[in-house]
Length: 283
Image (cartoon, rainbow, N blue to C red; front, side, top):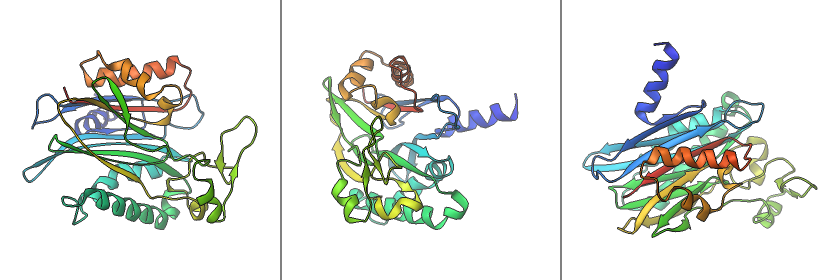
């Protein structure tokens, strides 16, 4: 076995997806019915894969946390890779995480962004969107996001979006009030200062005056009617609606097979972007 293959197996074991096309799976120790799987596919761009995922269950004292995230980088891998290694640690080290998880997540996002900006000499000029989900004791899901990666919960066959797509047009006034502008060039998507197609992101020091890094956060109770949750980068959501994604995997029991099926369908629908997907099955 080569060194690269050994490292790849280690990444899969701890639930860290690399910048290579990759897949993995895991399951809860608290509930045998709850499983997760992920799959990544590089897009047709000339740069290296810039998506990273985290998907793992972690024991903390008497609690079990499912930690799931997708970090979709732009202008390099350094920022999403940093987020993969540090964001959840920062969240869980917030003193009020167990009492006020939404506020703790917001503070951790802010602190992490400040760290990235302080390290811009090392990490470079790039940035990253993020969607994170923390499953607490198989009962409560804390979802946060900045940018256009998305989380969708399926309950009784109906898709429910748990995140907000932070698009420049929707936050035009806020960007303008910070001194920026939103471009609308023919044949292109709206962009902050003519450059970035999302209005919120980690990093991006050269644009930070006009961007926000404040996440949208929501807390969802996971009842018996919850079937699965999908986390995916915009490479999936550009070509599939929330309900189409839910319908695509509703009859697939295996979580990793579900994630792979979604990425394959996105490619079939001519998505050219990097695609990363995590599916957490509750039944």
